[in-house]
Image: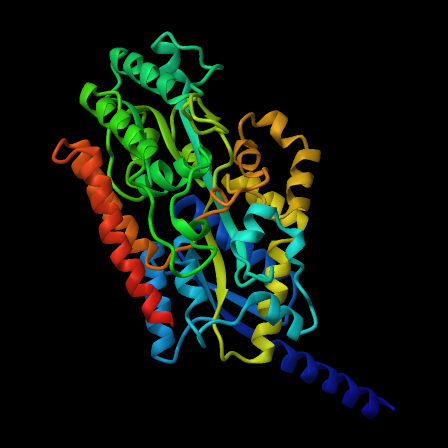
Length: 435
């Protein structure tokens, strides 16, 4: 009897040991650093502790451009990660990388644990879905552009800290007063192409490119040499001349101008909220993007930024099972709400937004729901988003020309014409490459 019991106990122990050793590793490459990197590690750690079959291993691989290039290079070398975080401008490139990607919804259905695309906010799920409405990548750190302002600077400048600017004219007027109050800069913006051109177009309900901004086909071409864009860059150029606007560089480089207390106003990603809270030594407010009041149907809605999670092809069924379980975990109402509240990224699911609302978070954190409200609209063909091939390279062209415009080297008309000409050459190349 004792021998039998011993045998059973030994068998149980060995089974447990075998089970522990059988945990499947899942490699997850991402671009989150600082406070956001801490949140990613915390999220992954909590998932790993919630079950024993899979171990997600996060690795920081540099900024968005660097991590995307690293992921593509790794796939070509035959050692791609299982999950790769890719910024939204890489969506068209990833979608057209035939044979490299395992579509997310298809994967989840194949392992018997379907992910419902209807669970996500419309503007979020729609952007990362194919033409037939199926998720291709997993919405994760979705953001949109918002206007942050330094309430301490507003008080010092004699401005009402509870009445932030709504129009571009009001931004310019406030910027002058902030400068007169002794601040180095009135207004600046991160991600100039995404915010000052792409979101600007959607917010004012005008086309950025033909073919519904690229959603309608690969023959899309830029259309930003139109009068409203000329007006806008002329307005910003004039602000740069009088010192109320400071061009702070490309990408998120200008973030430091605001968090260091040098700029009174700043348009940036809603995902900056965590770092502003962590590093800014001042009271700040969050409000919606400025607009031109004489433009019909403005404001419309802003478009998403941030990134989604892509799954590489040719992985085992067990890996796909683990990835699906991880994706369902991070999109659960509790986790989606916690991620949103801690980072400033929008809750990618409707249930996550409702959970946050019910908790009273927005009442205690005024302005934290601005991003969701900007995205919570019936999108138009002009405001669904931008899906163009070579979009990172197109942004480089646009940033370069805006630098020339703001420094007075070229006129807004000349700069925009160059953006369109050079970008459309890239789009023609992309169209030919995938046909």
